Amino acid sequence: MEASMNHNSSLKPAEGDALIVVDVQRDFLPGGNLGVPDGDAVVPVMNRYLKHFRRIKLPLYATRDWHPEDHCSFKAQGGPWPPHCIAGSEGAEFADNLDLGEDVRVISKATTIEKDAYSGFEGTDLAERLRKQKVRRLFIGGLATDYCVFNTVKDALKEGFQVLLLEDGVRGVDVNAGDSEKAINEMHGLGARSVRLEDLEPIHA
Ligand code: VGL
Ligand code: ZN
Image (cartoon, rainbow, N blue to C red; front, top):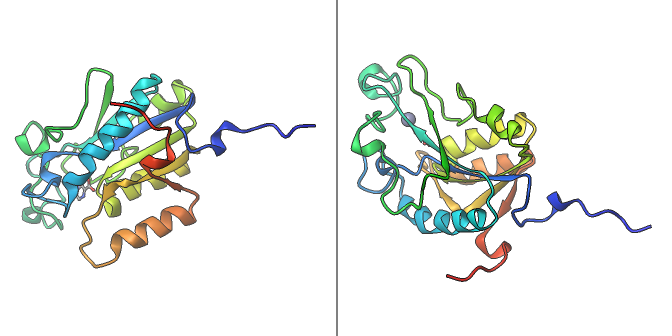
């Protein structure tokens, strides 16, 4: 008897998969209020993944950090970060060249003063919406590897989704040298696998 092929062992996007673009916002790009080194490098890469997923009409999500102006994560309130991604501000907008359209569902997170949320699942209906769409596996990339990508991936695994980390589509803050590498190792240890653009089918223009 022929062994049945589980499509989820393939690294190519197919039915049951969704793409999650994490926090690719102006404030996280170089020059932004919380610029991630080389963060703008994820834009063209995530655009390629968007193209792959659009081509076969798979669900697309973009999370965004969407803070009130006196958010607890800001230094003035005793938090670790400079003010960033204030809801409705220019810095909170998605990166200019990111190919988001009407077909991308936006998930806003960390929207209340007293609580921070690095994960796109925390305090949102993301898991519920994905399950309603019969999604079982998530391709996750964006910013920042060692914060919001890391926590979104961990929660996705906890919620029972398979996770493919878009390793060429992430960049980290690295407050301490090696933080991103550690985060990637931890994600792998928890069951996430890495994918790169060249693992997907080639697409033209
Ligand atoms: C993030 C720091 C503070 C992120 C959000 O999107 O990774 N990092 N807020
Ligand atoms: Zn934040």
